[in-house]
Length: 593
Image 1 (cartoon, rainbow, N blue to C red):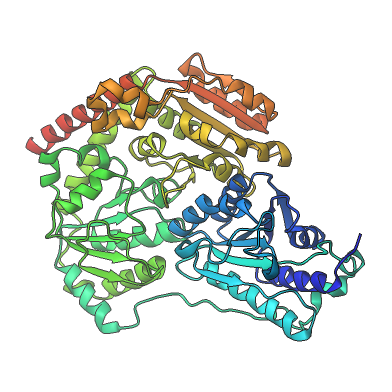
Image 2 (tube, rainbow, N blue to C red):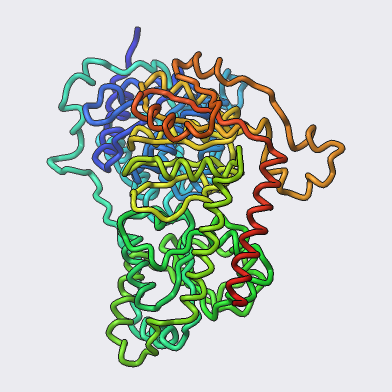
């Protein structure tokens, strides 16, 4: 079989520069045209190759790895429709600011648009869903081309992680022969070609955004010191040091914090005194919401999951909304924002806290703020009602979240599926001291690829529990293969209400004639068989009282563990409404007392 020395040196230089730019993992889907990248990657001493047969699953698997590790991960596939199967994960990566290095193999130029097999138009295939696209040069091993390919590798990594983080796409046209020259690969000198003693061919330094204008910071400090009725809103944001910085700022201002479960504020050893975790339940009530209107909102991260919070902001257009965004994005679905400050949230919070402390002599003492007490009192009453009634209701989906939060070990990771699971986590995952990291795919909010994403995350964190609905689980059954191939440890809790449970909360449910056909979509599937096919253990829970014990046993057992909890869609919706009504009653009573 013929091999190609020029191709080998070109691909080796590219992959080596990826590694030197801190890319440690590559997810490979088998294919002929991508042979050079796959074979050379498998021989590199400092990159780990993860095989994932299904390209759609492979891309989500890499997405989960990148999300959990907070670093770029590469994916590679062959030409044709294999590339198209990357699209859903690329979209999610773009919307949730996850760095992916997308490498697609392609036919050379002479075989394009002439009817050659497995040849589609891959130029700018992902359009605006990627931050950068490069049609790579035909491989050569000249000094200029080796420098070129290393430069592109370094720039690709830098572009993927520089705010806003996201996917980049490099398209490689390869001519046959596609098999690398194995003797060259075995020579360690190959990896250093063109470096000339440098650790990296191109070193890229990132800067952190911050307020550079002292006058603007001073004006902000003065205006906030005169506002007692303030509120901090933290949406999805996963960054070490964020919790401590935000809490210090809130304490300085005496402002309560609406903390989305994906903000990482509800769990950990930090103080929870100012952190609200049950706002979604009481802000649903129109009367209650009118009693809690702030003069100013300082918002970090994406918009929270809670629709009640979104409507609360939209219904009060006179609130001064200040968004702090270090990614250079414009995340304001209310279209009511007063100010957007493009600064790193952690750096900004620390700077503002220091400035407020220095100017403390001009502030109004607010340690006994009635405004703050009002929010904390309402939140405590709502949480007490949610927890009490949540445990009283039999076969209630919100109770699954509470039991998970109560039993998960320290430093666990809870990956949450979309639709109802993430909303129940918003309502029933209460403040705790366990350092439980909560992650989800909330960029495009889709239900596809969730199993694969969670399994990708499980390569970096342990233990990991995935909470998912039955339709979402069905959408990504192929993803279970990764657990078998790579001996991954994951516990999956399926809330099986035989269909799309979230639609029972929407206006469509008021039209029963074709509701089940079009929205309820009961599948009637027994997932035991597919779990066993992938070498996993399946448990259908008969008694809810044993859920916590079963979860802990599954975590200890290792491997793929799937626990199914059966619920009823209509009854579950009624139970949610009953609890929300009682929360509104209890909080209103406290307001009026």
